[in-house]
Every structure is written in structure tokens, then in C-alpha cells.
Length: 459
Figure (spheres, rainbow, N blue to C red):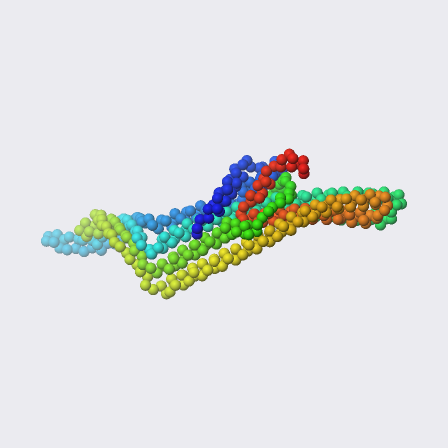
């Protein structure tokens, strides 16, 4: 696989950003509300998946050393001690005396040292080492994918909490308007200016708004649970600070797609798997090829000399061993075919993933554009709805219109505010999706910086 220098530069920048976030002072429960930067740092510090990914890289490095060991001669030292209950012997008359000879001795000891070195394996060792190196590259690439996923989830959780907090604020304001109308209708009913139906209608609106507000609080609780899990402490409810901001973007979908296809870690994972499959084909092809190895040994034992069985005798040997599997029942052919099929499967998976990434980006860009248009239109609609509510409320107090007109104006304003907030959230989520596709979250760099004084005043 060719080195992508543009990707390497991007990856180095990401590592620097992550390292900066990781080594900044930690945030403890009970401290002030968390910023987006705090959330990202906690998510990276407390992620079990990142720890697992780091362990996988260490494990793959150990695998490399294991496969490299095949090139180093192996040394085996063995020793045995054996006690025989009965030892065979025979006697030979020699003149006036008789001499007895034993076949060995009751207590025998043997020390054996052997060295074996594989000289030629038809590329099997080289293929194994290459596969282990690719395995480490695969672990590093998967770690980058895990890093992207953690940042993605942290951004998702952070802005989901902001969305639900904003929705609660809008429902609370809507409830205040509904209660204000209810109070006005009660006063006018007491004065005989309107029928009881007007009061009941306003009261129903208050109850409905209260129910909607409670539902929004439940959604906020669920979004905080998700954020707490992402930050590594599911039992603690974090408070955050931030705003849903509209950041206009000028993007070219083709450039986004090209960049995503060049740097996506899951695509590079499949490319590495393709390389591994090629090595597996080579390994399978060589399984029925000859092996040549050098061996040598040194041995020390007693009981070997029949004239002096107690003495220790040493010996050594050296030689070459050639093994050539002539027939393995066509197992090698089937192994090779399996490896080739696996390589073809990986190629198809890569093509399918590239199409899926392209589709995801196209959909996210469409969502981004739609949300931007809705944000602009709803800003104007909110101004019109606020003016309409003010005029309708004044006319109701003057007895020109009914409470139904005021309720309709309130609902129109609430709907416009909700659509504007949802469009803001959709725009941010589309930015997150596109950033995830490119594995580049630099669009959110401004969100990591505290607002200036002029920005605070404008807000």
C-alpha cells in the first residue's frame, strides 16, 4: 500500500490536538460546567475502547517479535535421569578368576543439547513476518477509527444536551405566555367580558404546555445519560456550557468525498486486509514446498562403555535436513483458493464501503444545505410571529379578537422557534457527520474557544 503523505500530515495534526486535550488538567465531578473542550478531554481520558486499542497495538508488536524469532536458531537443552531396578550382566571365566560385565548401570544420566536453524522455508517466514507487521498497521488504523468514533460520540452527546436545554427554555417561555393569557382571560371573565369557554381554552393550553415541558425534561435527562456514558462516568450527571451556533460553510461535495476516501480509516483497514490476504495466498502456496534446516547436537551420558559403565561419554553431531511434502491431498490448493477468495471478498467490501461513504457525505451535505436555508427563513419567521403575537394580544385585551387568535399566534411563534432550533441542531449534526466522514473535526475548532466579549454582547 502506498504512503499517503497528505493523510500522514493530517494524522499528525490530529495526534497533536488529541495530545493537547489529553494532557490538560482533568475535570472532577462537582466543578463548574464543562465546555466542549472539557468533554472531549474526559471522553479521551476515560475511554475503555482507547485503552483496548492501545493494548491491541502492544499485542501486535509482540506478534512481530514472535514471528521474527523463526529466523533465529532454536536451542534446546534436555536432561534425563533413569534408575533401573535390574541390570543385565554376564560373566566370562578368565583363568583363575571370572570377570562380570553389565549392560549399563542402575543409575543413568543423559544431557543433550541441540541447535536447529531454518535455512530455507520458501518464503514462509518472510510472509509470516509481513503479516504480523500488517497486523500492527491494522491495529494502529483501528485505533484511529476508535479515536474518531469517540470524538464523534462526544460531540453528539454535547450538542444533544444543548438542544434539549434550549427546547426546555423555549417550552418554559411558551408556558409563561400561556399562563399570562390564562390570567388575562380569568380577569376578563370575572369582569363579564368573555364567556367561560375562553378561560377553559386558555387553561387547556397551559396544561398541554406543562406536559410538553415535562417530556422535554425527560429527553434532557436521557441525553445527559448518554453524555455521561461517553465521558466515562455513567453515574454522574454533568453540567455543560455552550450554545447552538450557526456557522455558515462553503463546501464542495466532490472535494469532501475525495478527501474522505483518501483518509478514512475503515477504508484503509480493508486495504490492509487486502495486503494480508495477499500474504496469506503466498503462505498457502508455500505450504507444500521444501524446507531446509541445519541441526547440531552435543550429548553426554553414562552407562555407554561396557568396560567402564560409570564413566561419562560425550559426542556431537551436525547435519542438514531437507523435507519435501510430495502429496498433501490437495490441501495446499484448497488453502490457496480460500486465500484468493478472501482477497476478492475484501476488494468487494472496499468498493461497497466507498459507495456507502459517498452516499453518507451526499446525504449530510444535503441536510446541511437544507438546514442552512431553514435557519435563514425561520429567523425572519420568528420576527413576524413575535410581532403577530404582540398585535393579537393587544387586540384581545381590547376585545377585538378572541383567545383562539392569541393561542394560534402563540403556537405559531413556538413552532417557528422550535423549527429554528431544530434547524440549528440539524446543521451542527450534518457538520459532525461530514467531519466524521473525513476524520477531520477542524470545523469545531472555533467551538473549543471561549466567546469574545463582543460575541457575548451580541448574543
